[in-house]
Picture: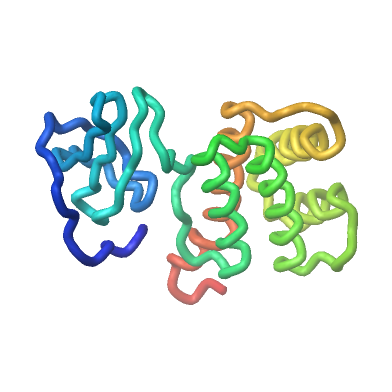
Amino acid sequence: MADRLPGQWQNLTGDQAIQYSCGFCGSLVGSEKVYFSNDARFRVRICPVCNRPTYFEGAQQVPGVAYGQPVNNVPPLIDQLYNEARKATAAGAHTAAVLACRKLLMHIGVQQGAPVDQSFAAYVEYLAAQGYVPPNGRGWVDHIRKKSNEANHDIVLMTPAESSELITFAEMLLKFIYDFPSRVPGVP
């Protein structure tokens, strides 16, 4: 979540509140503070939680909302890469998000003890063989492998549905490997 931006916005106009998810802090808000363009087609609303501006042009929102949720107790570099993938979805960069998920699996593999400088397939196999993939999750790992290979090697663009499903799996995997075990006292 973004820290609250200090200061106050000047010359704001009141408007009917609309509900939206802030692309900065992730809060579901109903902002009444707004700047209008001279023809009222464009609006900039101020989030009442983090005090940051969001641009609206019709239904388009900038910054957009990152797919997935933050995960606790994740090592900093892995957390940074996961959030990079999430932010890519907010920017509409779905191929970049899928490729970041691919890289994320490689980083998780190395962090969990896989040798460095292996192929992507070797990292995926390592995670599965070491029990880091939950029961019935092998199909998901294979799906990420296929989709990320497609994004990496073929001349295709990934869709919002494809990036969101990979981020959902990555989120679940991070919770399974890092967050859930840290919640039980005495479990390494």
